[in-house]
Amino acid sequence: MINEKQIKRLLDIANTGCQQGHVFDARVIYSSFLELDPDFAPAAIGFAFSHIVTDEFDKAKTIINEVLAKNPEDSDAKVMLCLCYLLGNEADKAQEILRLVSEEKGTSAGNLASELLDFPL
Image 1 (cartoon, rainbow, N blue to C red):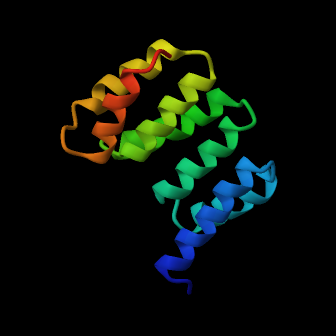
Image 2 (tube, one colour):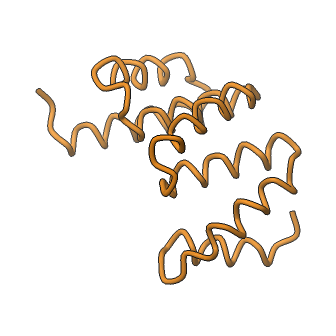
């Protein structure tokens, strides 16, 4: 069995793989974790990211919304949904999410969202 540090490292490798164009390999990692635990949000969010980098925004939104249905407070999922909207030319929806997250005063996600609202989208 792999430990928590190894899981994080594998997810980091998959995320980097997506950024470098190795989407198929990254999806193998995400899918493997999701087969073991379908509710493992970090793998689901990464899997959604793999669809964002290939411009499959509808698929990414579906995955992220499933994560948010189980945990509406998941900041990572909210940020990924925001990215999905931004890259999918839906800046108005991205700003809506940023406004909601910015209300989380004192959190890193809330602070980042507040700063991003100052930039024109």
